[in-house]
Length: 92
Image 1 (cartoon, one colour):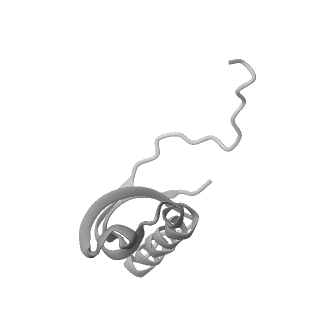
Image 2 (cartoon, one colour; image 1 turned 90 degrees about the vertical axis):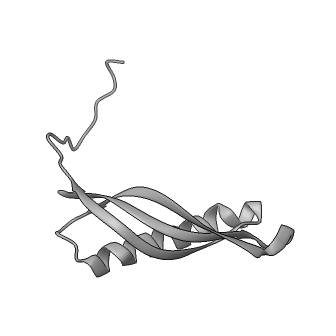
């Protein structure tokens, strides 16, 4: 289990080149990411970039949209009160 969980707010540029490549929009979104050890700002930014790139290749290409990471605006360490490693859902 990862002990370092962060809520990260970041911006990215979105456009639909098949419709109008000159209309690029700056969008803001948040993501929760987990780290094995206390991350530096560089590590947080690198992980968000990787996530955006993976999103581009796995989803956005299919709908004709291009997204590009812009910057990390802020990040906040999340407090995890109690975590479990294995989940038993047999009782449901």
